Length: 332
View 1 (cartoon, helix red, strand yellow):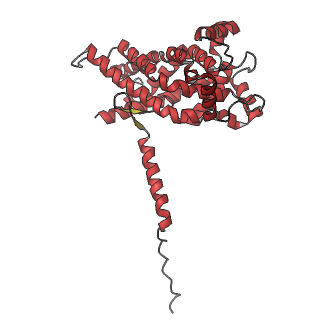
View 2: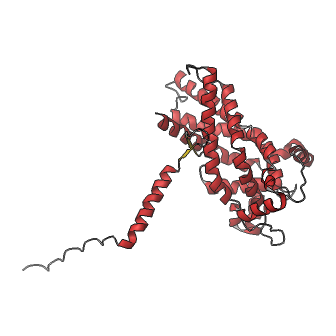
View 3: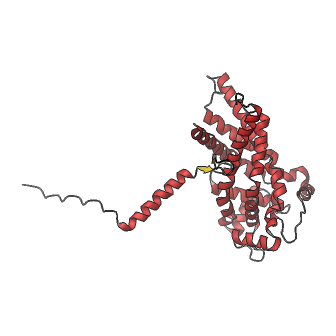
């Protein structure tokens, strides 16, 4: 006897004409995600990597919200980062942690591309000045100068972006004190009531703070050189680490040094950015620094440092390691 006949399995459904645009859009989005790693440097047409704040954007933004609120709130409002976090969640909900996220989401890619691209160009320029035949490595001092120049170069882009972000992050959900409905409305009100120059009111403080990139990139070079020298001197010991690991560790440690030195300047900058544009409390960055000092001396300049330090190592370590790897591939 013969068993029941088996019908052949039906062929896979054909791709409908309506699906083709969706598939094309998916392919384009995947292509964009690969290309997003590398941007075109506006300064010297060199490929550069978005890397100063590149890792988990949501984590970076909500930690910055906590940091900025502690920096700019009146003394005694928050007992620390955790208290600020809990108060924000309890009074405004979890979405409040992501206030002001859209300006940096669009602006950081450009600003980081300009920062790292100009850094590469300044290093090349200083290297030719030190050694025309490029037979000697760039000195530590030249790494510092290149970092400071790159930090200044990006200030014209980052100042209005961070000003809008700071004002939105400080705004609570209370309808009685709410001024802005979003980033576009915030920018419109600032320009209407104070003129376009109001978006750049914190430019002097931003220039001073961004000078600390001299410390960031010179310490990064110093740590990288130290780890590489230890690996060569003790190849069979625990000091021997690969170049990518050395770059990762150097980037994280350099970020910690950067924030330990530059955090007081960051607080002054943020105080000016969060200041009222109709009735300002701080006529200059010096007056903002004096007001912070009167609130608690040197200790007052480091309020909110903990969340900044916690996020600085992993985000910048990963970013600089990726940037070094990408630049090596692109230059080879």
